[in-house]
Length: 606
Image 1: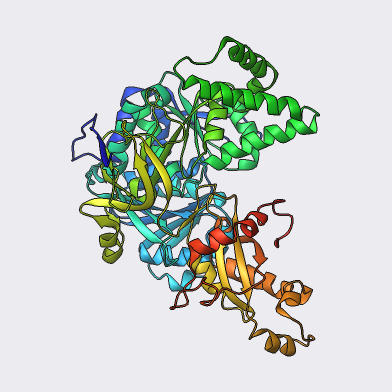
Image 2: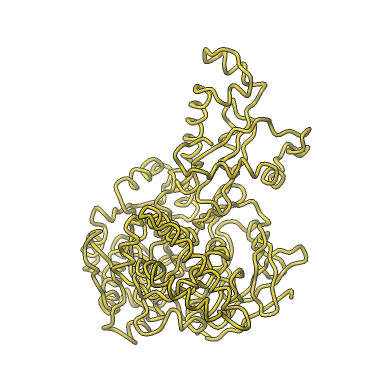
C-alpha cells in the first residue's frame, strides 16, 4: 500500500485559537483538578483546579502586557520541565504573543541564534546559570528588551507588574489569533547544524489534540485520567502533551528532575505515561539490575521472558495456552507487579515516541500489563503523525495515521505526511520550506512501508540527522566540522542513532602528526603509537570539550574511538569531493561503534 488516510473526526471553527481550548476546559470542569506540581522534590503534590489555573494564567498574562509584550511578540522560555513553563505557555498565548522554547542545556551560540532568528523581545530563564549563558551573547541580541529568572521570582514579579492591566485587555488579546496563526516556533537541528525554526500553528495543536482525544479516548480521557510530564518542554512531544490534557480532561503533573522520576511516578500515580523509548529502557534496566543485586537476576530473566512470550501469544489466533497463562500469573506475582508499582500502580497505557521502541520492549511491557502504543512523528508534524490505538495495535509498527492525517510512501521509499498536524514552514527560511515539501506532502526523511491496515513501519533514515535513544535530534556536521579543526584530526564521523549518547569515530592526520609532536616537545612516534599516547589523548580530550561548547549536553560527544587507519578516497571511505561515505563507515566499523557503548560512560575513550 502506498497511501493511507484517516478521516478527521472533529471539525474546529477556523476563527478559534488555543485560548478557546483552555476556556472550554474551564467551562466544562471549573472546580476539578487540572494541574499538580511540587514546590520541593520531597514535598506533596499541590493541586490547582481549572478555574484556579485560569486565574493564574490571566495574572501572568497581565504582567507580560505590563512588560511591553504586544500581540504577535515572541517570548522565549529556557527552563527544565516545570509547572511554571506550562503557566507561561498559556499566559503568553493569553497575552496574544508567541512562546519560543529553548532547551535549558543550550549553548550560548544556540541561544543567540534562536533569540535573533525568532526576534525574541522577552526571555524567561529558569536559573542564574541560564542567565549567565544568555549574558555571553546579550550584547549581540539588541531586540531582547528584558530577561526574567524563574528562580529569582519572575512569576511573582509578573503578577505584581500586571495589576494595572484590565481583564478586558487580556480578553481582547485572547481573541486575536485564529487557527491559521503561528502558536509557537520550535527549533530543530538541520543538516547544516544550524537549527531551523518550525512554525507550528494554533490549528496544528488545537485540531490535532481534539482529534487525538477522540481517537484515543480510552487512553487519555477516562474518568480520573492523569499523566506526569517529565520530558523537556522545549521538545515538541512534551508541548503536544501539555495541550492534549486540556481537551482530554486529564490532570497534568510536572517533575523537573528526572533523578526523582521513579519516586514521582510512585506518588503521582499516572494512568497513562507519555515518553521516549529511553525511559522505558531505563525502567527495564533498573528493574533488572535491582533484581540482580538482590540475587534474583535469574527469576527476573525468567519473568521477563514469560511476559514477552505471553504478549506474542496474544497476537496468535489461539492466544496464550493455559500453561503459559499460569506461568504468566506466577511471573506477575513474583516480579511483574513490582514494575507496575514502580510506575505508580495505576498506569495501563503508555504512548512512546521520538525513537523506535523495539519489539522486545513492546512485548515486555504489554506482558507486564502496560500497553505501549508506539507512535511516530517529528517537530514538523507537531509530534504524532501516526500511533497505535487500543483497537489497532501492531507491535513493531508505529500505527496508522491519526484522525485528520495521511501517510504515503514515495517512489524511493521515503515516508511523506499530510494533514492538520503539518507545520506551516520554517521561520525565515523559504528555501528549506520548499525543499521540505513534495507535491503538497511533507518529506520526513525517513524510509518506511504501510501494511493493509495503514500501519506504518519505519525501516530506516534517509537523512543523516541522528536521533538518540532519548529522542534528541543531533546534527553531526556541526560537531564534525569543529573537531576536524584540530591539527591532529583528519576525519570525524559522529554516531549515536538510537543510542543513549553521542559518540565519534576519529582518525589522525599522519602528515600533520610529526609537526604537532615537534611543536609540543614530544618524541617522534607512529600514528598507532600516537593513538595511545597520553599527551595526544589529552589534547583530543580538550578538543572534544571545546567542540561540545557549541551544542547542548544531549548533543555533545561523550565518548570517542580512534580508528587504526584514515578514511581516504583510496580505501573507499571518501568521495572525490572528500565527503565521508557515512553509510559505508557505519557498516564497516559497526564493531568499533558498538565498543563506544560498552561499559557506559566510565571513560570518554573506547
